[in-house]
Length: 508
Ligand SMILES: Cc1cc2nc3c(=O)[nH]c(=O)nc-3n(C[C@H](O)[C@H](O)[C@H](O)COP(=O)(O)OP(=O)(O)OC[C@H]3O[C@@H](n4cnc5c(N)ncnc54)[C@H](O)[C@@H]3O)c2cc1C
Image 1: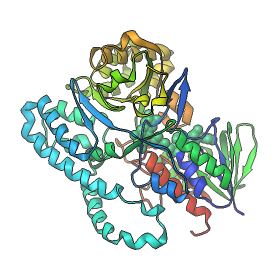
Image 2: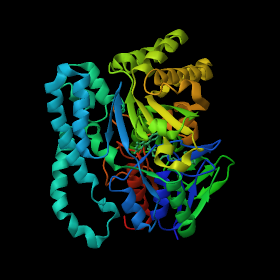
Image 3: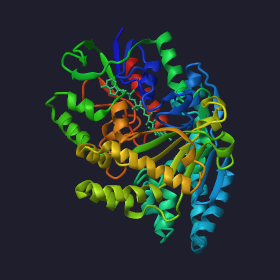
Image 4: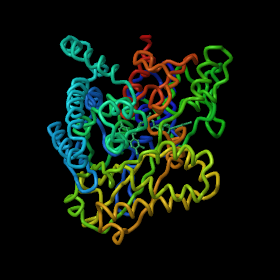
């Protein structure tokens, strides 16, 4: 049997493990698997440490079906709000409510909004075509004939995707001159995300689901399957070196693990730093990857609140995208943040925090509104986050005032939310803690704390090609996970894990 070593027990490494063949070992640096899909409990409140809801995308359920596994699925309804206007999104019909909301906020842009909404509807229909079928990678050969009519429709979608593969902010300028409106539509996405993805979110909101017991039950299920059917997992074991000539990886204690095939489901920059090869192809690839720019990370405030879930339910569903101010971020998270990173003083950064939080869009997740077992009776756990560049936090960290920065960020979150959507919040906090891009970097060992791999502001340093997603220029080494394809996220991490697993079958 071929010896298969998989580095990283996140969702991509677990997927690769479940579909690989051979004598398989997953090596995971943490005490549990899951990486950026995880749940944890603090004083009776259950929170998500990573992704707040899962997207099926025609991938997760078919993948589970293929493994004969079932999850305890719960709905994950979304609300979207700006200032005091809040709409619920249960189906794509709610795009109409979004249109009404935008028009009431920006009455001077009524006509442009109507034109924009027409495109949103089209994009939502397009993404539905892609995501509402079982991804062919998880289909049996006997089912392939069913895809013929779908392929024709999908080709049309791929064409549209290609045409709209421009940054959403730029695309929106075709419709609007009002920069606030552009910000409010786009600022909760990663900077420069392709327009196609941003505009199709009204489908994505309806595709989200949650799990009884929290999202951590998903990797747990895969982990159990893997241990029963496939191989072993080494926990608390960090790979620190790869010897490609001898085909061994070494852990932090110098222990060696030989491989015939290595699947790297962890940080790609780390792999390329570890490998010593002199071929031109490798050196070129290495330079590109080490210079590649990761996407933004997130800043998250976790709150245990002495207020019953019903109070929160009156305001929104359990997954809520909320902008307290319709003005939008403008240059606060673009030019200003770049200047602060280059030459901002502590005073400048402290001043910036308040505006950055006030004009931002929060992703708010309230697990107890999705699963009543997530908090003690009569109390509510709330997870509030915004996207944040790693470099600003790194600067603060290097200057030695990281804890103070976090304290000020937390304070700003609480003030802004108490002054807007949750007036009862400030005086009812039982406890709080927060996580920054540095916490994410440390937990998942991911460059710049990136949660989706490469950013969109510069071209990704990988070949963005499904067929070749797993290939590297390193002999016998394949890649999977959020750095292997862009844009990424849980479904793509799963797909790339599945693609990498094929190289263990002896087919290629
Ligand atoms: C707050 C937040 C919100 C998100 N929202 C969404 C969303 O709405 N939709 C979406 O699709 N995605 C979302 N994501 C992103 C998604 O969770 C990740 O892209 C995905 O889980 C990545 O999986 P992965 O296996 O590629 O990487 P990871 O989850 O990072 O797993 C890598 C694993 O490798 C281990 N590891 C790293 N280095 C080593 C080493 N040297 N030796 C051994 N082990 C190592 C790590 O400990 C980790 O377990 C979100 C993430 C976060 C944090």
